[in-house]
Length: 486
Image (tube, rainbow, N blue to C red):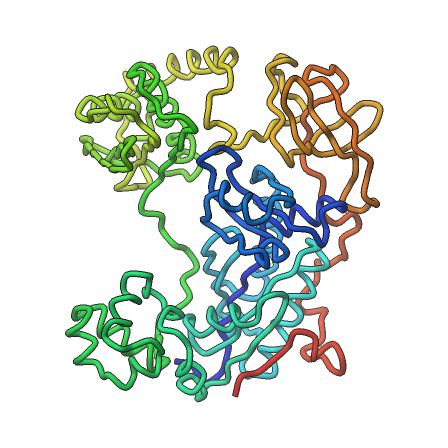
């Protein structure tokens, strides 16, 4: 634990949904749900307007539609989210060399290591300056927590939501945590929480009062020891700048169970190719190939094969996944398939024959992709992000809800919906007024997929930030979203 709140946790507010609202003026202030839109789709993020109706992340989309039938349901645009995330992470990197990203929209920052804060006042000023910079550069809001440990900083940012800042002063941790639910602590999920509840422990105060020996008896030595320390507000974990990935994987859930063994094999091969693409993008290789199969009855099977050496060869991974599939009974139907690679390394086992096969395989896959029609589940699990130079035949183009388009006469817009040979588009830009809605044939030659527009047209110049910003703020500014918990 630190004597000053110099660990910062940033969590962007309803990130995907907020980005969609910023990009689409007609959706601002309205319920927006981002996720898979198929019968087995799952909510990735819901706007705060949708959350007030009961919609939340990881909820089946079908259930969300019953709770919020008038919400806008959109397919994720990961190209946009990654672009915004890069801008946010670049701002965080100016505060400290120790930035620990947890996801596209969440990260820890060690302000002390960057020399940007050494007490409560400077930490608050830095946190407020960060929130202002994020809004100026991206148009979005983020909540900031500041504390003497990672656990408390994360709790603080959660308590500050939405669009707020909370400082937990060192020495006040136990009083703050005492009335909170045990579920607030890292590692306490539904099962552990229910187990503790049955033992009469529902608050963090209950855990602290029970003592370490009792917690060890209830949940085991390792977990019990850690749980007791967290209940006392103790957390010595450092901010780690680089988090090594332990595996790379991809998976698809299908709207309709797959029964055809040839189709199942083809999907496994497609997933293997995507997995290798991610592996190479990360400049890694892997030694163990893992196959995941969820069958019609929701039973989930995993099979793995360890290779002689690490590889990033698509042929090797594809053939290994195919061999693993042979050991799984899929006759009743398959609802989910996944392919992953573990045992990651920074080098590959050189194999000239594999390299030659790789080239042949890539050429063949390119030819196949040019003629492959969309398959069920594609929109849900691998949202299309077509670019302006997309060479798909016009009639074969998919128009995912929420994705960008450009019409030669009407300009930039986004897809409100499509079906029965028609696509409905709302023409507006992030900085325009809500636009008009027009409907076209799906093969209209004047309509094409487009890249996302920036969320802020004339972003403020923050090239000299944070040195250019004052170390403290006063008056109304300092009160905006800022709060301390004594």
